[in-house]
Length: 113
Length: 111
Image (cartoon, rainbow over all chains, first blue to last red; front, side, top):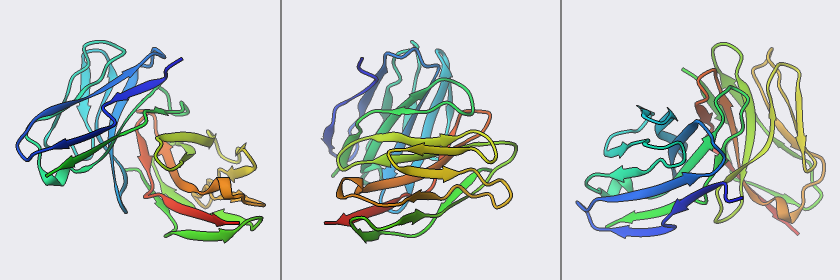
């Protein structure tokens, strides 16, 4: 079973370019989320979704868009990349519920030059 | 809002040493508590969890006890191995399933 699949693993963008980070899960999880990981900052929540058609902002949503048209997919769009968006991005999924464990993708290392 | 505070790192230990990584939290209601581990170049994976007060989570020789009176969830291992070298994150979820992470701590174990 694949779990959570993120693509691409590495990406270099020029300032102002747009791109979409893909995330797919095959566990029928209702809850999906995107985090960015920066040195000394831990993981910060960008956007999340509790089901198809429902999304909401996390802690650091500016510059990012998401949509959830299916249970399986939760893409993250960078509208106009900035150097401050250089980071490692993780997608996660889980069942809904306070004790549910989250499954993480392998991450996307994004560099904006 | 919810928050998680981890001790500052990095931590360097010799093989077979005792490990303690401190974690305290602030949350409303009754959160669930987690430790996640990130090995080099990989995503996070669950190490252990506890869902109510006085529960003890354990896995791979690691243990942590949910202490509501001290709002803590310290991670311990009696004898670390080189293969335990990784970044460790303490985290919690509330009723809305949102994970709140601490900043993480890097553990390096020397042979």
